[in-house]
Length: 161
Image (cartoon, rainbow, N blue to C red; front, side, top):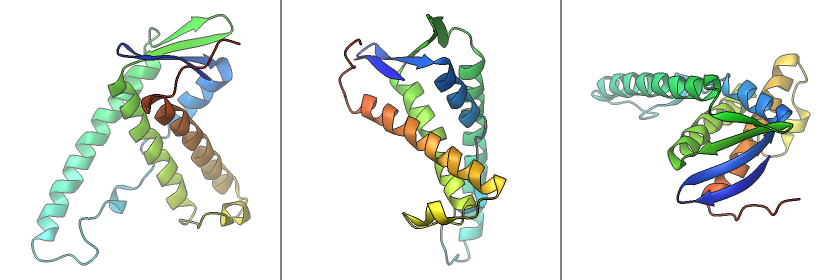
């Protein structure tokens, strides 16, 4: 994946076929962070239950809107234009920020599913198919996040090879 444009018009990325496929596979996991993870308080008070209900409803609505945006992105043939052996994606800042939210949800949801491991013990986790899938999703989502954050932070486009 290569950033080739970052300016007031948006961001341009070149994807190989495999990179596009990986991105779409990862995006299909959204949402992965359990809704119950989002709590107003660890020690709820008398009014917190009502407020928690409002938070849960708002979160459900936001997730559905985001799911629809992601579905539109991956199903719209104009979003990822075939070019040569790969694809070009021209994205607005808003689209990039939406994808970052989705990727972060997937990364955090995978981390939670793995038992919220400390930094390095992830390699020592159970190697069940489910654990391997969560480690893979966490790594791939994190990789895409790093690239998109660098673009938003103003990393200059890479020089043509």
